[in-house]
Length: 262
Image (cartoon, rainbow, N blue to C red; front, side, top):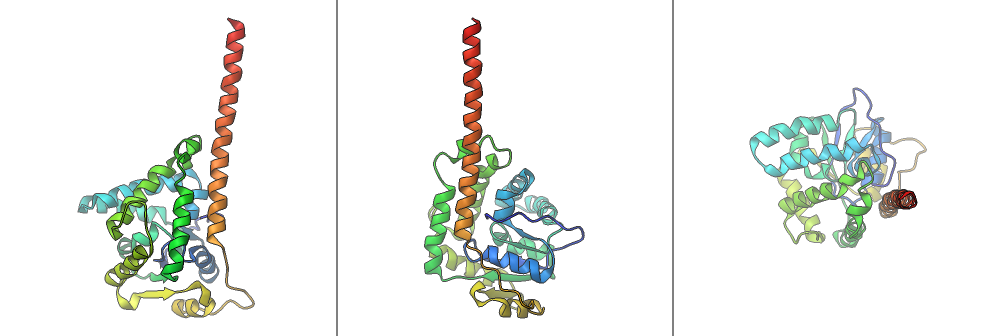
């Protein structure tokens, strides 16, 4: 979240399923995959927050059908998920990291790579993200924005998905969530298909996992997700509040003109 959205490339298909939770270096990981796989990567946070309105709106029926949990809803969801990811070489971040069984079914040849982080350090970082995206006036502030007006209902669906997978108190996901996610992955992903990767280790382990050569004379991407997320949240809130201010200004002019007329 907070980087530039990717544009799908005709004919590209998912080669890597990113299984790491948000705040585990998913932005750096995404940029590294774009270099190694020579194609666009679908970073869910960035696509939904900075992409066209169809991005965030497209995830809502996918999540709704997943939450229903019955075979018919799953059969409806899978084509929607495939359509959302058409033209991308990899998917990272949430909710992709919660759709691992479905993504493995859709892309049986894709490698599953989970970005990792010390759970003790991950917890306050995740809490910071939750506090930024949960400001009390966000629903009203984002209402004038064509895509981001869907952010709050989208966020509620994400929260419901996390609660179903990991349990815990609503709206709170600390290190226990991180540990439950890792345990869940080891249950649902065959051992030979699952790779754990810390972005601090750079190109070596990732290139080895993908069976590709290390890019010559190119540093591993280092992106500060927290700063990017904060910039994105402030950007959208500022846009929404500005549009409200313009709307009220126009309304005020209209009322004044009406009063003078009568």
